[in-house]
Length: 69
Image (cartoon, rainbow, N blue to C red; front, side, top):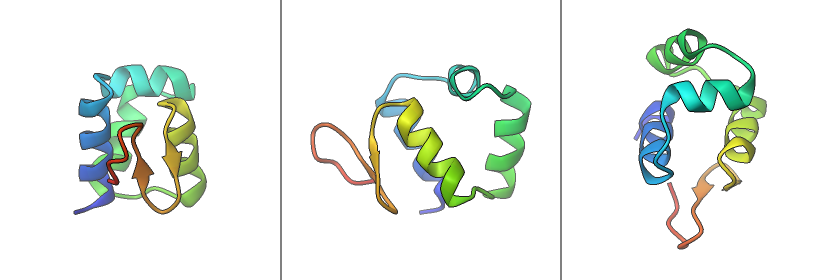
């Protein structure tokens, strides 16, 4: 599973849109979409995404119910 797929799944589980994520991160929906299209995220960006949606990230996203993405 690509990181983009993992982020999309995470957003579905959190009932969030890319636009909402972008707003929390202080960037544009377009910027997030371009990164997702290229599947190009730094470790720092992944940590910021995890913090933005209130999950733990350790190379994976850990949801409150214990699901690992």
